[in-house]
Image (cartoon, rainbow, N blue to C red; front, side, top):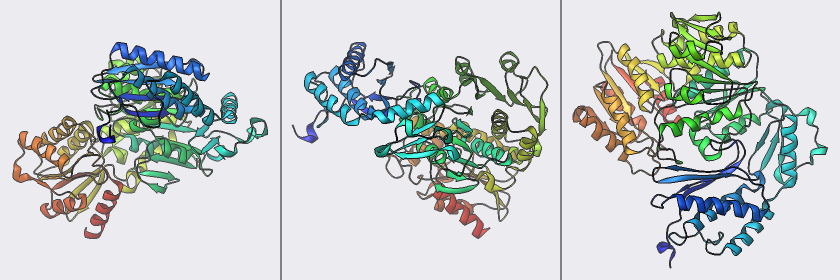
Length: 578
């Protein structure tokens, strides 16, 4: 049988989980079964038996495993030795392939699914080649001493920030030769959510810097140390986190922790001092076995695995599905809300740390809302709130204030920082930047899902006045068509006068040029937006120039921009032509 005719593999993806994941606290592996390959009870039971038998044959300890079914497939995961995770992915693929019998193919060069003895021989040789007893001894000793460890394919780092040291995996010291007293941990904050992550990261970093910490942070815009960008691009995954924590010139870190990195590799750290979950909305369905909101919530709540009894998990009390899931966790909880009168807070935040909006002010309640609080100032005095009208930024401010409290930052420092942050567009680049261009108001933001766009457009509608509104609209190609239509429906509710559809540079992700725009344009027209009000220009900066040419003084342009490079091109355009 030729390669072109080979039967398909029985799985879509197979990955190592190098840190805490939504499945386990320990490292392990996971695969998603292929569409069209039935993940019925008999096959799942056979997979489990295969994994247990092969682990026993390889001399690996018994450990948790899980078969998590979803519509059309299943996630198959198990805990495995950290130094043999590549071998463990092969075990997982073999176990599922064997369970599927002869209905699917097997990959050349991998363990034969039809010959158990040969598969065992192949996997045992692979396990021996990957075994690294010095690495596991160092990791065990680091855990015993409470020293953080960062591991990738080439380097082990013991300690973090100014207390860390890097060692090549091919030249590791034995534990007894280590100066463990020189290894230490820096304060770490993790931030995840569907919207507001980067703004909250920047706010917490600003608080840490104002309190005297040399701070590094990672986010979708890049890597930063003390306000200087050291790398541009999306660094909201484990690579960004490790890169920041390996900097010897920092003594505090704030790490944006996006869904993709959690699902692909797990968390980069085993422990954090505080973790924030801004909100969770229906997005990214169809990837990594995530098909329901509750699956996505559970993925985001992976951050709770990094919070011990001395930390704090900061959760949005206004997000009902998220808060109900958080209540089931065994983790110290703190709550933030822009509705201080919510019944939920009276019941569950009476004696837990909270930060709430009340009577136009932001209040911090370290001992719970039943106790006296600390007035952090009038919300309208905080530039990020846009006079108190930007409700989603009120939530970001409350979340950051509570996280800052958990990191030991004084109320006076929080108050002073919030009075200044956001007064300059550079404070929160790409998030609700407001420009005046020849009398045209231009807003640049990152909003890209229905909830984020609704928050942005609610504010735009309130500020629109008598002028017209134009919007630039595109999306990443890895979203389902229905997700693209939901974004278009959200925009259509606000009846924009002009819509310029675009491709997002670097985000086609398997789609043809103009395909995303076609889906969105069809939905806009179906929702009553006139065809003559809609145009398509593939390149983002060209689309913005089109909107600027169309606009007249008093109009408002809303520009949701995902790409860092495209945003910088547009900023140069506004700066040079204003």
